[in-house]
Image 1: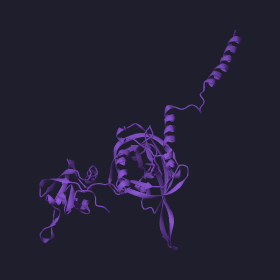
Image 2 (image 1 turned 90 degrees about the horizontal axis):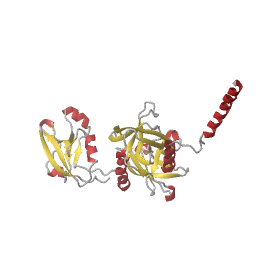
Image 3 (image 1 turned 45 degrees about the vertical axis):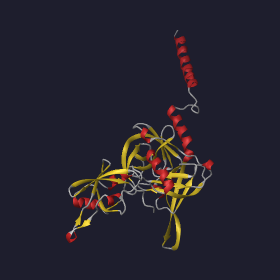
Image 4 (image 1 turned 180 degrees about the horizontal axis):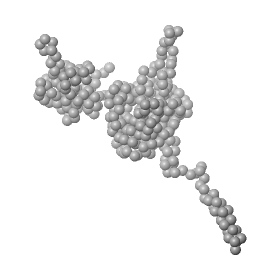
Length: 356
């Protein structure tokens, strides 16, 4: 009986592992749903991602002839089959020459057609065959929620076409641009974003563009789990204007602002945008808005200080610029100002920006 029992146990030891091995899936065929989605998004979108390098012409002490010196690199993506490439402004800032390299290794000289340092965006143009240009599919960043998966594709540390995966960590963040303007409604993600990822696409699970990777928060300069992306809804508004006009068509009110405004706001203990003077032939002049004047003995007399536009508070020039970006030339806004301890209101038609 003991022998039979031992034979049964021995048989079980042999048979059970054999059955377990037979049930093991083939790893080449097996994918989790999340893995399958990551692979699909990468295959769909990576042909749209490009590597951007820039260089400057500099003179050395040993030679009067300028030499081309590599300045940096980053990422971009194909916006349209016309050859327009979107990236960050800081990726191409002060570059004398910009080169765009496609996924297949083909390189093209690029020219900047539109720059917006305030939102850290730039549009380049390359002359490439239409069949080689695979545009990204824009999504809707207003649909994002904290916890939704996002995928970043870029060229960190010069390593071409690298994918990282994470989630939306927060929405509505604010970061400073190269021009020290505040970029608002920024997406925060924990998808690893390192030097070289700048200007690359942030994608949702459908492979749609939801943001442009622009910055990391890290004392060491490497990813520490906090990255930021400009929302695609901002990009969709700005890029067409950069292509058509070379810059964003933010309207003007018809005033000039005082230089060093923070100093004077602190000096006078006020908030708002100080009107230096009004532009001739505009509504502010016609309606009697007043800039600074010189009183007796050279004392400067404050005129209007803009504190509100269409019900939105204006505490400084950053608030003013962000509000103006929400409007277009020809629209009429209600401007509230303070002058001599009284509040005044003006109905002002916005003008197109002056051509450069």
